[in-house]
Amino acid sequence: MRTLRPLLLVASSVVLGAPSSAPQAHSTMSFFITSAGPGNGADLGGLAGADAHCARLAELAGIGDRAWRAYLSTVSRGGAAAVNARDRIGTGPWYNAKGVMVAQDLAALHGESNGLGKDGSLTERGAMVNGRGDSPNMHDILTGSMPDGTASSDTTDTTCANWTSSGEGSALVGHHDKQGGGARPTSWNSAHGSRGCSQQNLQATGGNGLFYCFAI
Image 1: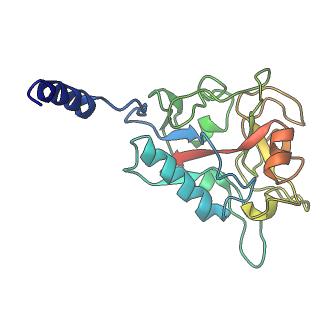
Image 2: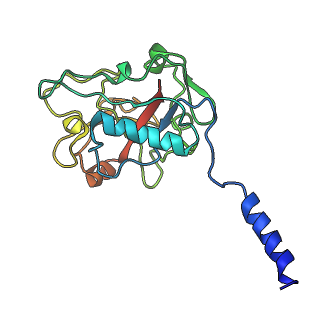
Image 3: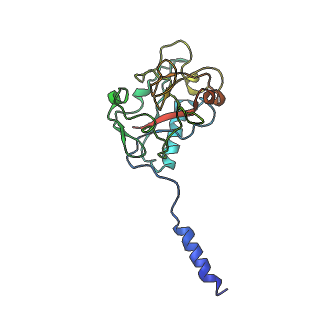
């Protein structure tokens, strides 16, 4: 026992002193793409469920000391008024997980000079999201929004039943890498509609049920 005790003490000190291998976001982070969706396609539990998912991921990344909102629009439905994604996210500026500013304000965010794109639109851990040409492609980001960040006035479904459907319907998506097909292939927030609302359909058209989160 006398010979084993020093070895046990050394082993214990190594374990207790081992730093966490989980990367931490920059303290200024106020924007990210979710590293994963809730897993039920575009059924995010509505806006409240999506906001809660943003908050959980931010907390795991070490930035849980602020309020987070999902960049998602909803349409008028069941007596509820439409909600514009741009009205949910504050006024900026916004920084990614590396501490790089992606937009100074709402005008810059929805203009041509924003710092979004594959290199700027990172997850809460600072990882790059697969884009066009990667396998699998995951550049379709759920928004339900028009290029200016407002809800669509289209009579067809553009929000997968206001983020409660994982079956029938469709949602407007943006291309985080600003590449691809659709009516507006270079738009980060309004490239085209999804094939459906299920996880399988989102993946089949180049997505994975991911969405943007902003701190307010």
